[in-house]
Image (cartoon, rainbow, N blue to C red; front, side):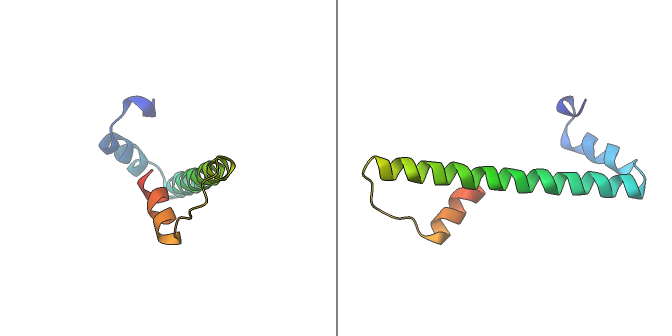
Length: 72
């Protein structure tokens, strides 16, 4: 159902929920966001290991790594 809805429609559906249900939805969305963040960190780490295996010895600064994470 949600796949066929635009953001405004999803927000309307959430607004129609009880406060307790809204809290559960928000908690779930935070969990999904955290999982995506961790998945991206793993992807970057895997790419770095592959780069090292391929002989790349350069490094990426923390700020650059965070920018890469936030852009994905």
